[in-house]
Structures are given as structure tokens and as C-alpha cells.
Image 1 (cartoon, rainbow, N blue to C red):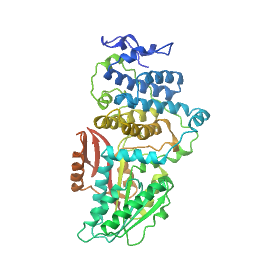
Image 2: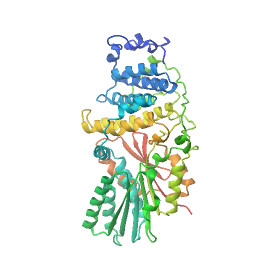
Image 3: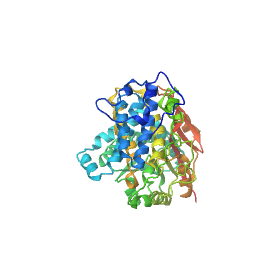
Image 4: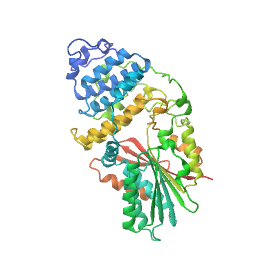
Amino acid sequence: MFQDDGSSSVTSSPLQFYPMMSLSPGFGSPYPWLKELKSEERGLYLIHLLLTCANHVATGSLDNANIALDQISQIASPNGDTMQRIASYFAAALADRILKTWPGLYKALHSTRISLVSEDILVKKMFFEFFPFLKVAFVMANQAIVESMEGEKMVHIIDLNAEEPMQWRALLQDLSARPEGPPHLRITGVHEHKEVLDQMAHLLTEEAEKLDIPFQFNPIVSKIENLDIEKLRVKTGEALAISSVLQLHCLLASDDEIIRKKSPLTPKNLNGVHLQKVLQMSPSTLGELLEKDLLTGYSPNHDSASSSPLSPTTSAKLDSLLNALWGLSPKVMVVAEQDSNHNGSTLMERLSESLYFYAALFDCLESSLPRTSMERLKVEKMLFGEEIKNIIACERGDRKERHEKLEKWIQRFDLAGFGNVPLSYYGMLQAKRLLQGYSCDGYKIKEENGCVVICWQDRTLFAVSAWRCRR
């Protein structure tokens, strides 16, 4: 915990009268002074409470973790400002992690939970609409595909996450405008829900008929980790392109993690941070709060074994899939992934890294949607909240949200026999025009190692890269 050693003071802050070490639940309202905190003080304090709570969870000090969660609950809110909202979801994830230590209790509490496919589809469509990230990825991917398929008469595209038909409707229009005429196009869509594939097949068939393009859609109902390569039905004479959007990170669990009975945490103790010194800072956004060296010893700027680009996670599932896809000899493979390191081996690493990432996403929504927006609440709760929960509360094979940095993906594809295809300048121009259509000017794109990264302010959030088989 953070102790007040009396080395400095902020006379206007009620915190000087309540050293953190003395806080414990009591009768009535145990923390009345928390309500008196100003927005910036509250944001800083919530960050420290989350880090403190995570440290207690990692070391098995559940009584202290419970006290920290109780304090967070006094001032966090899914309907509040950005820090209050994000703190709510990280606190829920930490609580979920604690519950998992009592499997019977955890299963009983979750036994009546209903997960609606329609709600899941709806919230992902909201993400597509509210943020430019997938639109930019689709523009860059389509341009790479069009350029690689120039002059080809038989084109086959494999979509490893066939969720959003807008990408392929746009591609059909691009192909119909080719000087040499459109090719015969076949799209193989992979998705775990049949209804998603059925809708995509209907919309794309309708669009192809309208544009008079010979078209077939081949649906494969499967999760990416269970994909049978034989069902992709790649034929001789086809020019093949592969698209993977926010999918490959799900395969990054190593065999060792999956079969291990226990996953002992190796917590790193937080250095004591003087609370009054922290309260003298005056950042204006959640991202700036996090940049103020609050995450002592856990800043993404500090190198660690798990965050170093020289040590990518080895995964038999991912290696097997990349080798199989390489064997299909695609002319181009376009990949979009979250560009952040959420795959650290310890809880504390993942918490600090994911705070930065989701802080930026929550800031995006704060700049474009009112706090009372039900659509905003759904995206935060049903999409970001579930991702945060998976990153923080889950281990081994259950942890699917294993986002990593572009440098590691570059190394993985290189080792799998792929060479980088620099994304075109024309695609960049299209993407920049797309970003200009958004009301806020915080979105940016830039070239990095022949790939494109999409940023909020100066923080990279998503990366798009293109690859071809290197023989």
C-alpha cells in the first residue's frame, strides 16, 4: 500500500488527513471523504487503487484486495467520467479473478448468465460504426488485395473473421471497375456463428448480382482455433488472398500454458508512491493521467521479458496455422491486430499495459458520444469490459485476448516464411480521407516498417500489415 511519509502536502486535498494505510471498512459510510475528491484527484486515486488491488490479488492477500475493491466501488461508475467508467470494468475483472479461486461459487454465479448471439453481433457493429479502426483496416486490406490481383481472372479470398460484409461489398465495387473487367470471385468466410455467415452470403450475393460479377460464397462454421484447412477448398489456378482481422492473437496461448495445472503468478511488488506528490499533477485526459509515471515499474516504456520484441510467445496452434496458410501459397495475406502488449506472463504487467490501451479507447468514446448514450454503454460493457475481463481474470487456454505489438507479429511472420508487402501510398491517402470524416481530430495513421499503425493521439492502438509467401 502507499504510505504518507509526510514529505509533502496538498493543503486543499482531503487525502492528507486519510493516509491509505489507515483505510479499512467501518460502520456507516466508511470513506465519506472519497466523495469530496475533485475529478483529477479521483482519477489518480482510482489508478492507484486498481494497482494496489491487483498487487493484493496477485499475492493472494484477498482481505486487502476486498478493501481496495470496496474503496473503488465508492467512486467508480460505468456512467461517470472516463476514469470512473474504466475503473468499474477493471475492478469487475479483478473481482472475477478472485471468484475463480472458488470454482463452485464462480460456476454457480455464472450458471444462469445468458449470452445472446444477436447482442454480440450488434455491439461489434457498433464498434465498427463508432471507431475508424476497422474501416481503415478494410481500406488498406482491399487496396493490397486489388493491387496483388491485378490481371487475375480467378480470385479466391479467405476471410478468417467473416463478420463485417461492408469490406467485401467495397471490394466487389473496386473489382467491377477494373479496366480488364472483374474476375470470378470466390469468398470463403470463417465464423463461429452460422447466422453471421448466412447474412454475409445474402448481402454479398445480392451485391455481386447487381454488379454482374461471377460470385460464390463458401461458409465455414468454425472457431479459428478449430479450423480445418481442408475445408477452405483452395483450387489450382486460383489467385489466393487471405484476410485476418483481430483473430490471430486468440491462438497465442502456448501448449505449456494450456496443459499446466496451475499458473503461479510471479508478482512484482509495487514501489511505494507518495500520494500527495501524485495529487500535484494536473493532466486533462485519462491517457495523460497514465503517462504521469503512475504505474511505477510497469510502464509500457520499460522493457521486460514479456514485452521485448526479441522474445515472441511460441504457440504451436499459431505456428501450425501460419505454416498451413503458407502452404496454400497466397499472393497476399493482410492482417489487422490490436497493437499493444496484453500477453505478459504476470497479472501486474497485463493490468498496466491494458490500462493504457483501454484508456485511449474510452477517451475516443468520451470525445464523440455523450455519457448517457446507451450505445456507448453497450460497447464499453459488452465489448471492452469483456475483453478486459479476459485479459485480467483468465489464464491458460481460457485467455484469448492476447494482444501483442507489431514487432512481434513481424518476427512471427518472418519465421513462418512470409515476407512483408509494403502497404501502398494510395491506400494511406484513402485512409487519411476516411479519418477526416470523423468529428474529432485525435485519430492518426502512420507508416511503420512497411505496415500501418492507427493511433489515438500518439498512442498506437491497431496495426495493419500485408504479407506474401517467401520461397
